[in-house]
Length: 62
Image 1 (cartoon, rainbow, N blue to C red):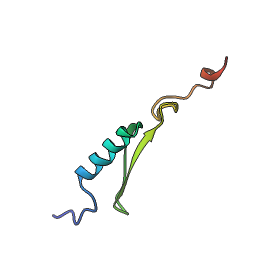
Image 2 (spheres, one colour):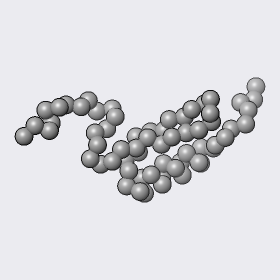
Image 3 (cartoon, helix red, strand yellow):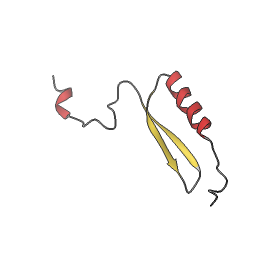
Image 4 (cartoon, helix red, strand yellow):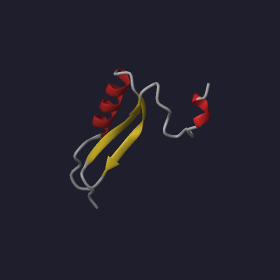
């Protein structure tokens, strides 16, 4: 059974991830929306906590 026409390829996702890394972002993953055929590269800036790390409000207390 055919999957149908794909709106992007794995190479498109790889290029987008490498471009984000070259721009200085920490790539955390990729979010794909099957209904629209779009993908989003999930990134963070170096000063933001990672999405998979628990946030501890006491880290900022001095």
